[in-house]
Every structure is written in C-alpha cells, then in structure tokens.
Image (tube, rainbow, N blue to C red; front, side, top):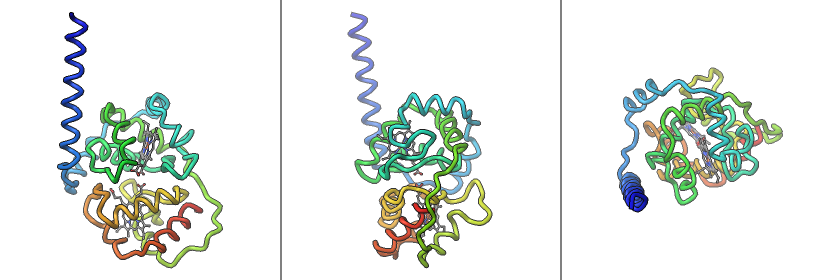
Length: 214
Ligand code: HEC
Ligand code: HEC
C-alpha cells in the first residue's frame, strides 16, 4: 500500500514537472540586463573538485570529452570557457531559453536535476581546463574583424562574449545561424543578432572553419 502511494506521488510529481517545463518552453522571457547582473552577482562560489565529480557522474565526457575537449564536432568543447559563461548556458538550458531544436533537448534534460550550486561547480571545473588549439593554418577571413570586437579581444574580461578559438566549426556555424534567425534567445540585449543578421551562409561557414583552426 505504502509503495503504491509513493509511486503515485512520484508519478504525479513528475507529471507536474513535465507540464511546468512545457509551459516554460513557450513563455520564458529573454534576459533583462539587470536580471542577468543580479543572477551573476549571486552565482554561488564553485568547487573544481565537486564540478569534476558531477561531470563524471553526469557522463558529460561522452559528448564533451575528457577535460572538456569534444571528440567530435557534434558538441562544443567546454574547456577554458569562462565560468560565468558556462554558468549562464546551463541556466539557459534549464529555463528552456536555449532551445534551438531537438538537438538542444539532451542538454535541457541534463540540467533539470542540477541546483545553481551544481552548475557553478561544473562551470568552474571546465573553466580551469586548457582550451583546445587548432593548427592555425587557415588565413583570417576579412569579416573576422567584426567578431573580434567582442570575441577573444586583446584584453579579455570575465564578462566578455565567449571564446571561439578552437571551438567546433559545426557548433560555431549552428549557433551563429541560430542567433541570425533569432532561434537562440539567450542573449542579454541583441548584440550578437545584430552582428550577424546580414552575414551570408558561406561567410558564416568560413568564419567557423577559421575559428576552429585557431
Ligand atoms: C549526449 C551528448 C551530451 C551529453 C551527455 C552532454 N552534453 Fe552538453 N551539449 C551537447 C550538445 C549537442 C550541445 C549543443 C546543443 C545545442 O546546440 O542546442 C551541448 C551544449 C552544452 C553547453 C553549452 C556550451 C556553449 O558554449 O554554448 C554546456 C555548458 C554543456 N553542454 C554542458 C554539459 C554538461 C555539464 C554535461 C553533463 C552534465 C553535458 N553537457 C552532457 C551534448 C551533450
Ligand atoms: C557586439 C558584440 C558581438 C559581436 C560583434 C559578435 N558577437 Fe558573437 N556573441 C556575443 C555575445 C554577447 C554572445 C553571447 C550571447 C548569449 O548570451 O547568448 C555571443 C555568442 C556567440 C556564439 C555562441 C558561442 C557559444 O559558445 O555558445 C557564437 C558562435 C558567436 N557569438 C559567433 C560570432 C561571430 C562568428 C561573429 C562575427 C561575425 C560574432 N559572434 C560577433 C557578442 C558579439
């Protein structure tokens, strides 16, 4: 009897979680700049050791690689991205703001059981890993100057746009297209969308190949 009651309670609990997230998917509002500033100011202090444990427990390495360098272009490399950036993307998956298409579902599901403390631990763990490096053979396309106004600037700052150096070309292309078409709704403001809204597909591909090779 107890078991049956417990099971019903669990099932009911799960159903309401599922409904809530379906709701959120459609209605999560974009970040207001103040709201993000407050969220970041309240980011719990992370532990690298706990983050490593959580990453192992969550099988993150199967797609993102040992130490955050992705083995295929399918998933992004996480190594050496800043902790505020990694923390933000995990929050964005949890609220379903970061929902491009079905390919985003694996991450939306992975973060559901995580607390903000877990997310911060994971973020600082990957942030302390060494960034991947490409061969540096591809000549810089002219348009890259535009990206360099915000990405990988000379004086990097924790709040900067995420680094693109050594990132998967497939991932850079997918994300740039998603900002261009406003399918990725994670921006605080619209600077990324504005920067790429007129970029042709071919130019985006060239930039992605260039960055992946850095
Ligand atoms: C089955 C493969 C898979 C697993 C397992 C997985 N991920 Fe992902 N992850 C992805 C894919 C694919 C994307 C890109 C999704 C998209 O484009 O919408 C992604 C994106 C991300 C991003 C966004 C990075 C950025 O710069 O935009 C973070 C952070 C991340 N994953 C962390 C994790 C963590 C932490 C775990 C373990 C708890 C994990 N992932 C497990 C496949 C996976
Ligand atoms: C005005 C500043 C600005 C310019 C110019 C800019 N970006 Fe961005 N970019 C950003 C910001 C800010 C983000 C993070 C937005 C968010 O929170 O979702 C971002 C995110 C991205 C991402 C997602 C990375 C990840 O790990 O998920 C990619 C890819 C990207 N930009 C590519 C480009 C390319 C290619 C160019 C040049 C054509 C460019 N950006 C120009 C500000 C800029």
